Image (cartoon, rainbow, N blue to C red; front, side):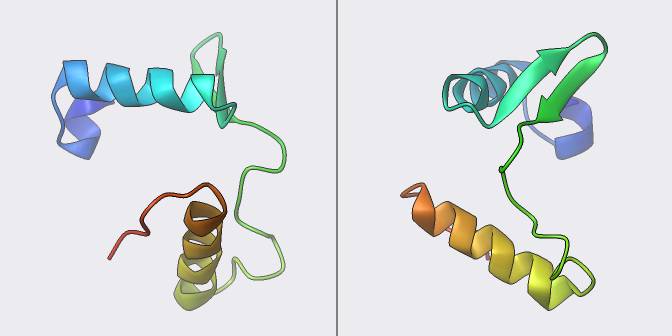
Length: 68
């Protein structure tokens, strides 16, 4: 996963642990799964703009900075 996102293994592990602690993901047998109610509303996921807007709103609700 670290190689796929272009981060070090330590950074990726730290971010995954943080996401688990925040309840955003849960570990499953062969990876991770987004928890229910995480983000990406199926009604708006059809367009890139809709997905970006949903991610920005999610970040804002969690007190995080939205990606560019």
